[in-house]
Image 1 (tube, rainbow, N blue to C red):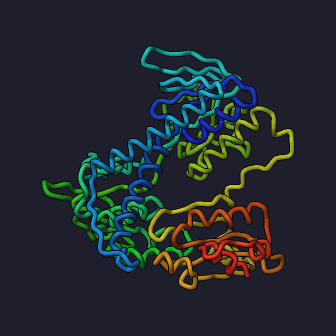
Image 2: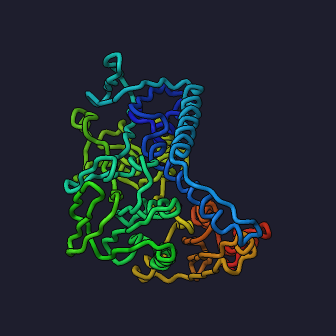
Image 3: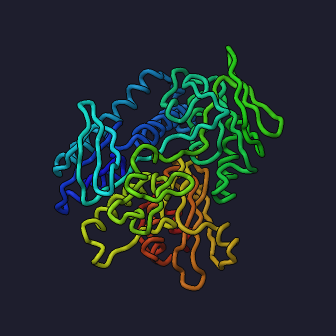
Length: 449
């Protein structure tokens, strides 16, 4: 097995396939562990954690403490992020090597259905493979009208952290990445304006969830420019202006693009191997993650499925299992509709399974129960009673179909609902679980009542 790309999909496929007896070679040009994971996800969450520490200190007097003080040190924050990245890369590399995986630092490309070349600093390395796994990831999308310079006009990868804290950051894009950046820089002390192309942030999420986040943003002084689509950025000596398609404009010190990503499908030899690609540049795959060439598998962002590290990791495992013949036993295919996801704003947002709005749009009968954290003893102890738990179930059978959580530790709490959705548990299974008290998880049992 030859794997091009060492992100979550690639390294999981490598580790499991090697354990199952395959001879595995992994080619990675940037960082083992994945650029999107270690250069996007991990740094952003580290910055969010620093912002949350500052926010906590700001309300510490309400918890019986004398007023503490702290200020942001961008150099120290950058050093911390590098240490975390290095430690995670070292851990991933060590695991792969312990399984006997051969690691090649270079850029991999197909030269035929079974042949791969790794272009390295020492010259090309030619490889033959029974199985090829493509997991080359994606990169931020940059439209022609955005003069990205890494200083004032930023992509997400220019902001971990930026060279200087923006005085007024204009965030373009109100999806998951955009709102996380709004939260991050607001908590670190920047003034932020968010350009929202539709009439709510997080347009793909439950309107009640989006409204809770909008209320928090407004309470923190975030300006929301709704129904506007950015179409030009003019950079001056002291700042910039973002112009929108409806004639409105926003002045700021910096602008940050959070308008999606594009797959890294160029230059990897897809044509040479006869691999089918869709109009967006994603490789067309079946439910086993096989491309149009059955022994060439695709995982991670390149597959065009949910762009989540957790999904990519599971795809890597499924690829290894299928390539090594384990699919001949009873097994479970990936069900992307049951993937849990989280947004690391404050309050956190997490959801899984069937959403209330989607069920109503389909005319499907559901039971929806909602419990606010304001009734939770633990939330009051934490001095953070914002948010709620919403559980969606089948009114006839009681089977848990989905749920949403807004509030502290939502990303951790959603795991209970995700397990219930995946295993088709009944609401009674949650109600009758003996949970810890006091704990935020008690709200899950109350919502299941």
